[in-house]
Length: 300
Image 1 (tube, rainbow, N blue to C red):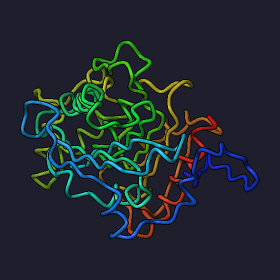
Image 2 (tube, rainbow, N blue to C red; image 1 turned 120 degrees about the vertical axis):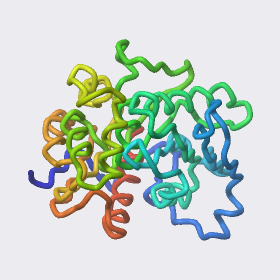
Image 3 (cartoon, helix red, strand yellow; image 1 turned 180 degrees about the vertical axis):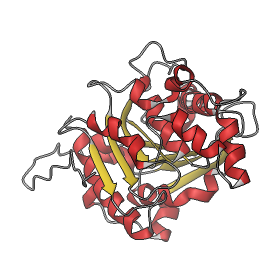
Image 4 (cartoon, one colour; image 1 turned 90 degrees about the vertical axis):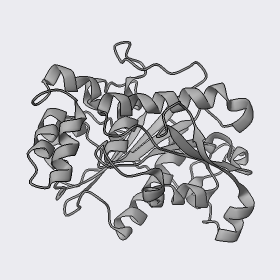
């Protein structure tokens, strides 16, 4: 697969609304500026389970960004089995340095993809029900994640106009974009088998927990949680990053999905020598493109 760019038009003379600020042109804030800008709510419970909690970063200046006043909702990776929101904060730091509102959430682990996926809808619905407290722009949500978290974000983001998806969002919630770092989009049955058959015991246990049943799950079972199942022309824009040397999510499992990406709407960042996790340099490059991607969403 060649490095393929489907969407990232930079027009120097493009005129945006005077009430919007281009995220790509906003300088990163210092630690002192971040401290002055944010009120941080730690470990906010959005459900009755101990793992259903999130950190909410409330910015004093996000409203001044106009149409770029996004609410970023991030989910960590870990094969739906391990990790925690505090372990992958490098993925939310660029948004915080720009002054955006950010939600960094945990979800239920070791109990299968179904419960883990439903927790994103649970969290968003909680925020809508409690938005008198948080005052977030929930009509301008970007769902994003790494690995397992990216699969959840992409699945929920693409499925909202499909009545067959089991988890529903409240009125007043609109997902405008999806940012996926190395998250499965197709062939979950293949990925499940790779993990179950892994020599590394932890990965094998994680694989067996994806779909709690005997043996490998059938395609009709896993397809409910494959983003490709729901992908159509009316879905939110997607930024997809993945590496050609990923040993956890085979690069070939992205191929059918990337063929469906839409010109002038979606962006594919394929790194031929990239692994499952981006390097610091790859991550910095990705975020420079992500902020241009977000700047252009309001025109789509």
